[in-house]
Length: 462
Length: 80
Image 1 (tube, rainbow over the protein chains, first blue to last red):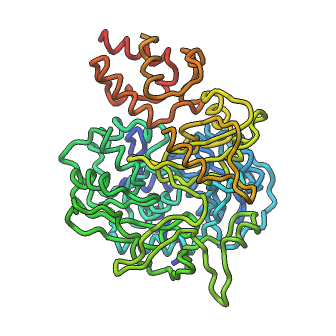
Image 2: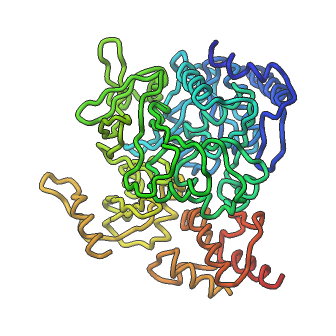
């Protein structure tokens, strides 16, 4: 069965079970999903869109958005989800890089730019844009084959059925959404779409959570930590399954969540480029004396891994096809070895009886609240300011999250103006926590910024 | 009230060179000065400080975008 057939199996069945709950708690059946998808497809065809085209979805996470997304999947159109809160400048960048054929705007109107097919790989299903170290976002091209392999595995491993309600908390451009949407629909289950506004009002989300009682949550450790801290969730609710991914779950925070929700927990691991490639099921009982985070675990069945100089390499169905229109980055991150294509994750791991343990990064990519950030991109953005000569970012770990401190030289500016400057180019999660002016940027003997020195300066003043 | 809220913001949430920069109508969220997690913390602080409790649907982040808006929200809550 191919990906599209699997996804539409229940939709074509046209039954009256609930497929979607939106952020206002409206419910939509599989049959209404079918009708709406057909209507949108009709519109796409009338405009001349066809298989192999690319469409940017710059829309919030609503029922209509989901229908647009599924209309794309049904027609073999490659969808590019872009967060509703994305700054205009970043959308322009993505438009330029992707050479997309069309865009669906926040008000659901759409513009066609051209109808020529870009040279996109055959099996591409969607393109997820993520932080790029050069200051320009990188588009991860996901294949239908990979999405199907992942969805099939989740169905078996987690015993998904039409009795399940899954939350869709992560934005659509986050690879977690592949599970939220497609694992739900292929199993005739229900997906609860949490839009941008509701995702930020955790007290309302907590109240709705008690009402909807979703059976499965897949989110970042930060989300679980904050939801329990601010959500005021009723004590008699617990999901049957909690999946976390995107960053390390600090053990004290994890244990706090586990004391509220005493259920089955999995740590899922994998960068966007590979989707989930390893997994670890946590032991049943809470380990209060544990101090180290849990392993990232063992390979998913569709994946092969190897370790090269401590770095984890991944090969298999769910590995991306390429970075969209970016052969240089693609060549740098993928290594071809006879008939195997390896993706170099940049993650340092060690091997144990429980599978892999995550140890850190080989480069300057960091995770903050589950979002990945290239510090080089931050620095490049700050340097776009005409009064700034140089910028260097360091990361300080706090109990809740990574804090980003950015040092800059040039003319001293107010932190408020600097936040506003960054906000023009970057999504909110990338904006540094603190801006510090420095007269001279410390450099090493090789002429590069001396980050160790900056860490010392910060600690000395901290 | 505005003065009090500005004080709270300066003490715990926003760093400035000069307090005058933080004007009452400065868009805090939509300009990137505050993030959505800070708003969660701010709500907790406001509730403690003014002995009020917001209903879940009142915590729309757009209502917290400026000191002006936050002040009128707190005023309304206090008098209700």
